[in-house]
Length: 83
Image (cartoon, rainbow, N blue to C red; front, top):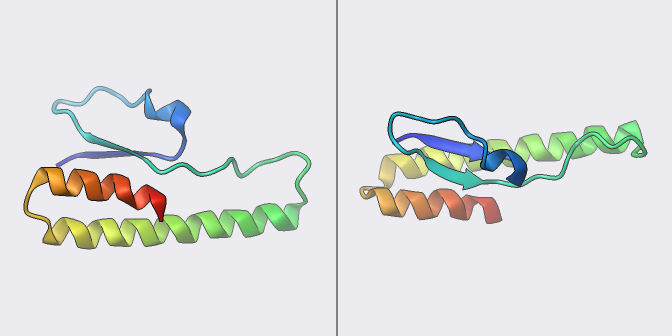
C-alpha cells in the first residue's frame, strides 16, 4: 500500500499521479520559518515538529505490521494527525 503524507493542506492537493491511488493523509504543522520569530524559538519549534513526526512514523510502522485490512490502516493513518 502506498502512502502520501502531506505536512500542509496546500501541498496535499498537489501530490503526483501514481500508478495506483495512494492513501493520502494530512498531518498539518505550522510553518517553521517566521521572519519575526526569534531564532531560539524557531529552533525549539523545529525540534518539536521533528520529534512529533518521528513519533507518528514509528506508530505508522507498528500499525502497518498489525493491521489486516486496508480500511483500518487508512483510518489509523489519518487519525495519527490528531496526536
